[in-house]
Amino acid sequence: MTDRLTRRTTLKAGVAAAAIGLAPAVLRAAAPKLKLRILETTDLHVAVFPYDYYRDKSDDTMGLARTAAVLAAARAEAANVLLFDNGDVIQGNPMGDYIAYQRGLDGGAVHPIVKAMNLLAYDCGTMGNHEFNYGLDYLGKTMMQGANFPLVCANLLKTDGSPYLPPYKLLERTLKDDAGAAVPVKIGVIGFVPPQIMQWDQGHLDGHVTTTDIVDAARKYVPELRKAGAELVVALCHSGIAGGPRQGGEENAALFLAEVPGIDVILTGHQHLVFPGPDFAGIDGVDAERGALHGIPAVMAGFWGSHLGIIDLELERDGTAWTVAAFKSEARPIYQRKDRKVTPLVESKPEILAAAQPEHDATLAYVRQPVGEISAPITSYFALVADDPSVQIVSQAQLWYVAP
Image (cartoon, rainbow, N blue to C red; front, side):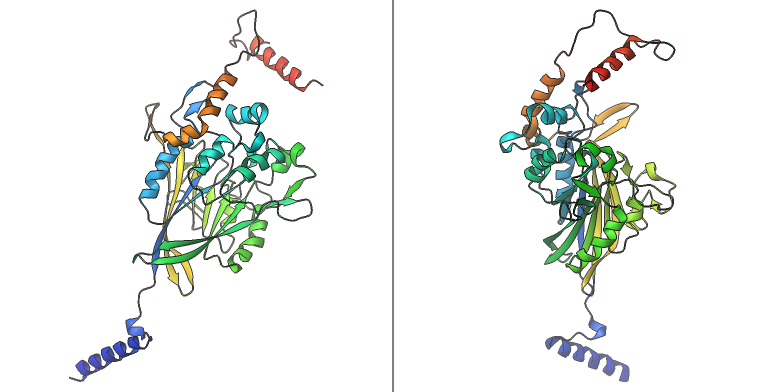
């Protein structure tokens, strides 16, 4: 009788407390939860069409137009989705060279790969090392003026030490929690480029910009981003995954970046590989099956649009902050390969093809132009054992190109 009375009294007290806005421990509500899907493209290298301009033939392993179809399906599967690009956008195939060296971007024209990306509603992007191959002025015309999404880079500086681009961006989004309620969430996005661009593109960059170590830049700006209100921090790291002890100034620093406090997600690239997957098995601190770097969820989405990076986060409210309670990483392909045969898994999105169709046609005409005539057959049968005409003609072309 006493136990029953005690239970009834406790219940009445709980109801009374709830009526005046108090929550006794025995009736505390479960912590709010929500799911967030983060999508990544990386190392697109001007590959809008599934087409290899070097071989002048279709190639089903590439093309943002195909990635866009995978992207549409991935968006339809989740209530809360953010899309990021991880750099190396404007250089990498003959279309990129045609735009840079032949047609130009005068009169406010938008680069075809950027035009295609604008249709996909990216939330943010960062710089890859190949963004600098054509110089800073051209970079400004293509990415910085043409993209309708923000760009961030924390370790690229002007000569006076100030950031060349905003080091980070605070995205304020209204997401749906698991109960269907609208929840405001602040997502911080920070970007990084390999510091080696100062050697690779010295002629374009020396005296104009400089770089710092990726991890050092993160240690400087991630606390600042958290202080600004970021409840979740996503690192756009155009840098690959490598093990061993940290020396500083690494080209592939994503694994070391994962040890910086305050970073929740790392999007990687640069190496043209796929993560999670066997490419990175056996490296200390890397979970190549689950897709984690020192426990931090990460993904690398191949190259030329071959994959879409997907990280599904389960977030839980812990007091005043969201924490990652669980995650799943995936690099979803646009094709499958079996017995050396490539089969596309999706069809190209027509609107993405249309965004670059004029430049695609012009590039085909450009690469199909004759560049000279030869008066004798050329083979390379004996190139490894003797002077060979196929090697000589390449050497002569190189000498002609560098001659004053």
